[in-house]
Length: 317
Image (cartoon, rainbow, N blue to C red; front, side, top):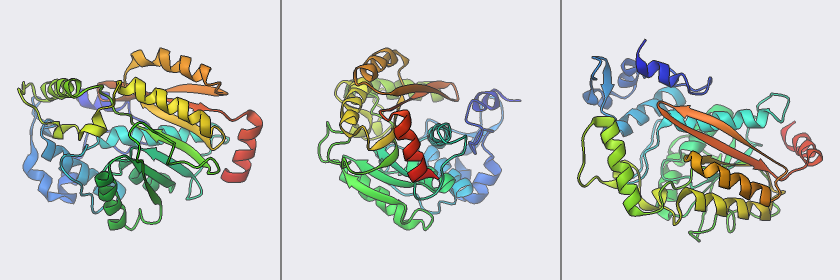
């Protein structure tokens, strides 16, 4: 058994990519990928994960082979997400909803999910729709990203009629201008900008390329990781999540579970203090692991037990 196989078993049990990539099946599904397949240090067929073109083609093949997505096109300067990690978030969210519903995952288009920062790839709606049939409100501050995501949705019949797009006009706002206090969403999801500055983002990209290829890039392009607003927020991940918690209180009864990815474990202590200060009824941390990287989801709700029961009976049953 290879080292990669051991690492990938940290993924969620329902994740379609728990096992090493079946490159034979993937290159059959997407023949263009074949020219990027080459032996790795162990002599096993693989791709160069430091090559953005190879990674994007691999993702296209994964989405076509496992999720039935025939067209997945967006500008190369946008973030190209790692499919297994994004799928894990959605599966853990499904488990979170099930934990409040007699261990039964609520499925179908009556379940409404808000994706904060959908990006050009529309990856979370793709997985949430194909796996669980959910509906999505997809927000983003970048109109070009929304345009690209809209094109993906309209180009794949399985996604059509499941996604509503909303442009966030204020770069520092999360829910304000997107959510109406009278609306109801079952869960919000978010992969916050990780870096606090362009310098920090470049340093992170250099480190990522070196870890993947062993090469040291003097002037790495951010295309490998995404455009600026996908990567950078003044104050970084912690400041973004602080804003999210603060704004969530203003629509406290409009959402069952608010959730976000938290990449930096050092941010957790401060986030917990903020959640207590916001007077949440409950919050929890859900560990995640992909390859050799650990992350976690933090989820919180303002609904009392009685309000949660009423929500389930009126929306999920």
